[in-house]
Length: 433
Image (cartoon, rainbow, N blue to C red):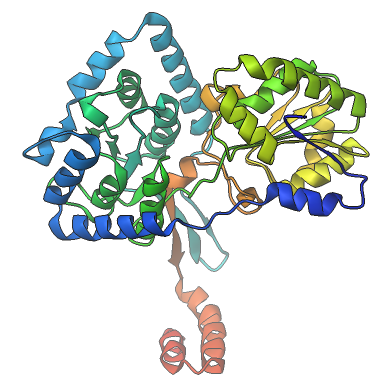
């Protein structure tokens, strides 16, 4: 039995088969929602005391005061110094590349002046304070620290508060090292919905933030969803996705492993390959079957590929790009001889990797662009995390006396038509007699 679906875009039932393959139940677990609602209410009511209670209960970390759970900067720097030389060098190189890329995204204030002297424009300012959630325990991702912290600091955010659970009191040195390199200002050893609530509402010890970013488990995602509106959030991420368009020129083993690179995240991850060459798809399938048993996460891979993975034969590369836009994947590899020729056909994808050497894994860690990407077809209307997520824009309007004569008449006419007479009067008062 094949470990992955085989579909043919030329088949009359292809659309229905693809719809079934892409189906993802994003409904929330009622038990999780109920628990999170109660935790957030408790944090809002009891502040530090509630966070301490939940930290003791869920993370097995006892403290008499929340300030005792703040990790001093000296500990981050010690963690950085304690890393093996190769790990430190890799982390520093990744941080440098991520920073240099995001510096290109920084928006600036702009204005223009009309002939009558009216000045219009846009003032760009950074958020005052941002909270960064970083998973702890088994799931520890220093790369996510860099990807979230660095664009915030490039944007000019003056205060970045990082929270990360430390189950059993165990701290991950690479996460702390990444906090030092990424520019965090304070780090607290707390996690879960209680940390999200503390960041959103503020407590005696934990400052309230303006936006919360960073990945987390189902409880963290539910908490972020609930506090949205009180604070901003980055996104509610779905399972990881990779979609590859190939012409058969890339070694089949490379693309088999590329499919594995996302399918290994969890059983709901999705890995799909599109190619017009049926023989090449046979070669990739054979590579999957040959390489899969030796993978450390083979059990997860088998479930992910069997449930949501597919090798799809298309009529052409152009048809493949049409399917890409329908799927709107988180990660897209254009693994062809001339990927630039296909790029204009792609409208919806979180990150696009061009050519055989541009493996998605490089984007996850060190290429430079952000690895926080839209999933579950949201690339149709949203973008990767970036500096712009930590900046906000204010419109600038300075109307001259001459400009008020033109704009006032327009505004008064429109306001009267809407029945808003005080609006009309406000505009008319500026008109010369």
